[in-house]
Image (cartoon, rainbow, N blue to C red; front, top):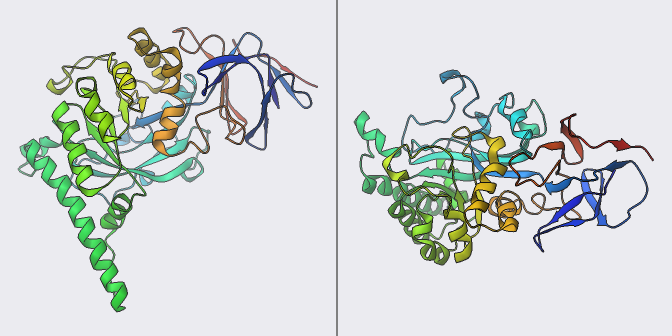
Length: 389
């Protein structure tokens, strides 16, 4: 298939350019002018982006439209690294189709922020599959942890943590337990002794050995700094999820080298640690040199509003190019899937959204959405016509 006559987003230059795209065998195989041969899709007057990517959400974990029956965000104990989102993830969540109406084709989803260490997140393709395994890109994509007000709620249940210091202690202790577990496992292997596996510590070994980052829920500046401090102590990778006060300590975040997943910024300041929430945050962090993605935090705000969020950040100082990068290539880089997703580039997956107007226009609609070259969504009111060869 060749998509012709549209304006496609070229990430390296941050511009929309009149180029054609050829997709074969699930991949983008050619980008250029006047491509010939095969089925042609005429996208005249349309804007074309990679499929949008949500770097932090709870889609499929906290199901749309129902209550406890669809709640698998796992907040019953403060430390549960053995839990895996892939085992709780529900492909039948109606939010997946709604997300396609906003051009969202890839998302990282996982547990909530009630526990200090909640378990591993999963990255999935929004491909319409009914089997979770058929949607999975990365089964264990990050270890969810949380700082700040939410995990302190265990104090009301007579458990730790009930202070910010005890939250930090439990995170630090979990990482130290993983270091000790690794040493014991290696010692047993050298001696040829039997060693009983601990599933939680096996997951944490992926963190301390650099195969998986900490996905840290953190709003307030002191909580952001605590995450950075602890992760640097153990030499582990991290993403700063929400990063609500990030604009107040942008230089410190830049120095850490950790990326920020900013949002959700729609909605009220529902608790004290959100009092500095601002649509300025992304622009300030990008200017400081921080890698930034934007999140709806679905189901806090609807995932199909991801491009609207980017438009609001554009209004508050983020450049047009960076606003689009924050919902395409930047989350791909942060999630470690840039070898497949996030850019219109030869060799990458054919995840393509054809918009009826500029994607940062609040009225923009996807006419067609493709995942790996397969049509997964069509709005017949705006979809371009397919012209046969």
